[in-house]
Amino acid sequence: MTELQGALIGCGFFAINQMHAWNDVEGARIVAICDRDPARLKVVGDQFGIDRRYRDAEALFADGGFDFVDIATTVESHRALVEMAARHKVPAICQKPFAKTLSDAKIMVETCRNAGVALMVHENFRWQTPIQAVRKALEVGAIGTPFWGRFSFRSGYDVFSGQPYLAEGERFIIEDLGIHVLDIARYILGDVSAVTARTKRVNPKIKGEDVATILLDHKNGATSVVDVSYATRLLTEPFPETLVELDGSEGTIRLTQGYGLKVTNAEGTTTTNVSPKLLPWASRPWHNIQESVYAIQQHWVDQLKRGMEHSTSGADNLRTFALVEGAYESAAKGQTIDVGAMLQ
Image 1: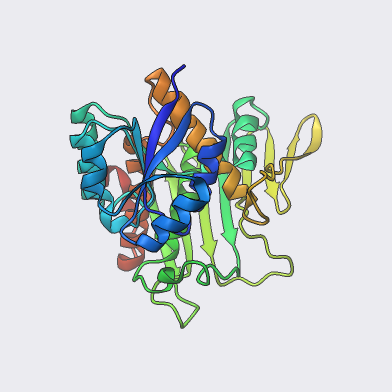
Image 2: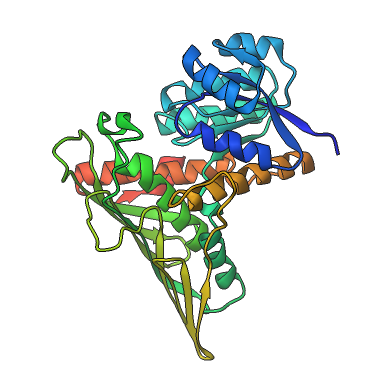
């Protein structure tokens, strides 16, 4: 089939992973890049051999010559860039968080729907090898019907050294990390009807919250806890692993530190190593995330060629984004929030 050509907007910290992954993806390649910072344009352009370089997105779209756009900028620019892509009939991948507000996200989804172009949010955590393994164990009925879960990401890793802007926002861990773990909870246990959350700031050097505990009532009757922390110091640093516990009618699943998947049911207990691959360009401990970047981008290309909806489409991500907004509202008010009402 014809190779799809793409453009990348945003050449910052995480975009390097996306560019490496695009080199590995079958059926697509990046032919143009855009960033307001000429220094970043040069670094990324030289590293990956991209000759078409733009400092203005309007100029990029005006010149065209690409089949999709990968928007890897910060959240403030997402709506304008997605709407720009829709006007030019260009399918778009948008980095998370999807938008500044849920209302903006709804408009972005509707704009792309009306334009007839695909829109996918780069929500890569559900594409991690260990998370996929948990999903597959559930799908084959290994523990019957799940009724309880815990999705935990607790770490003392210094994320601020590589991304110092994270320390400056009024919102931090739910918007930056919790959004991933909430999406995993939805992916594993289904959509959510209500959310209750509590937050805390432990690190005095940052503005936002660095600890959050979130209770989810799933529509199928299951209950789960999402707990995230960047203030937890452990003997063995688990970053960047999401640990999972699931209880079902016929057994349990435990995804443990070190990528061990333990399934216990009437047949006994089996333990499987579900470690991610260390791709040639990847580095530990980031390789779990880096492999998932490749996986979601390959999914984008495959589904785009088939003309089918993406797993983390804009419409799907509205239901994850609502959990983020609901968690902040719940923490502020000390109340349980009706998620369905937010999506109306």
